[in-house]
Length: 378
Ligand SMILES: Cc1cc2nc3c(=O)[nH]c(=O)nc-3n(C[C@H](O)[C@H](O)[C@H](O)COP(=O)(O)OP(=O)(O)OC[C@H]3O[C@@H](n4cnc5c(N)ncnc54)[C@H](O)[C@@H]3O)c2cc1C
Image (cartoon, rainbow, N blue to C red; front, side, top):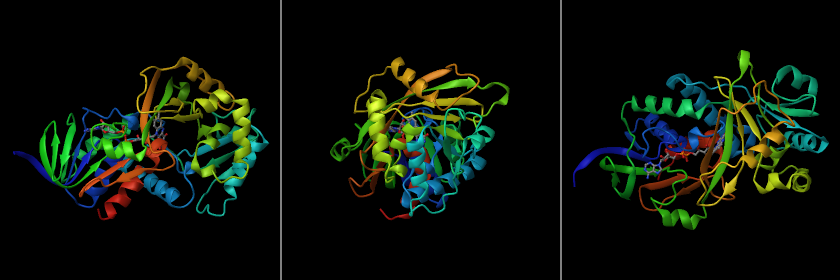
């Protein structure tokens, strides 16, 4: 068999998970080959809000992993030349119960190193131009969140990685079989010491039996973006409202959360049924990215459902405002998620590691997770 090349580390998939692994191993001085089946990044990693969101993570290990990722994003934005805005986040409370959950989040004894604070509506008016200070009773500001734009950042990271010594980045190179040490790709057979399989929502080609047995599945999300806002208008911190408190692990232990969940179930049943929580982020160019919905299953229809965007917009209008609300583009993204887990790591055979299932937190956690994996022995 003719061998196209050799490397210490092979990585299948160049979304944020595979890219972060390639960065971690190349910074350790290892030789790395990364294959992606596409000519350029088009997966979940360029279809998201670009929110690096430590705030959503449970205190402890995940919080530290998110903060480490944030550091890597800032380092790489300088090295690879893409924008990363340290604008923080603002969770807005429409009523006393939502404000109570935010207060309980702040009072968690495990919360260490969190530098956020409660903002009253006059501070919101002064510091968060995109928030409806007239319609909320307060909010929790956190300075830890960063906004990137996957459409800018992923291609920049690919270009930067390809220039690093010892790194080979092969696009249009689908991997169709792994039989260690051989990795069979559309661009020939490579030999590697270890291979990482980071194929995101593609769950059917490599190790489908292992993936199927794990219970991992896919989630489809709908989003849109506005045109560049006029006159350099900025949103301020990235914004969300009460529905987001139901969504992230960070609030799971707040004593008032079950009541909030029950209330939303009664007042907003269609939002709960469609997994809607609403986030607003703004990229460096000035476009505002808005969404989203969550529908789980292996196979998804390719259609965007206008009725869902109407629901998102209706909720958005309860806490956010911006000069230009027109839609520039709509799209959906699909990510893999293992219900009840923050990631899926498996070793289906010696030398092979599957890294997947980061769900809605891949931009937030991948760099930290990749470093942990690069430091651990197989
Ligand atoms: C709408 C939406 C909004 C989100 N918002 C956020 C957010 O604001 N913050 C956050 O932290 N997370 C967010 N996420 C989650 C985050 O985007 C994902 O967790 C992350 O992008 C998953 O990265 P990945 O590398 O696993 O997948 P992908 O980015 O999909 O990459 C997988 C790659 O593998 C390649 N591939 C697949 N099979 C093969 C093969 N056989 N051979 C070669 N290549 C292959 C694909 O071409 C693809 O490039 C969001 C996700 C979506 C969809």
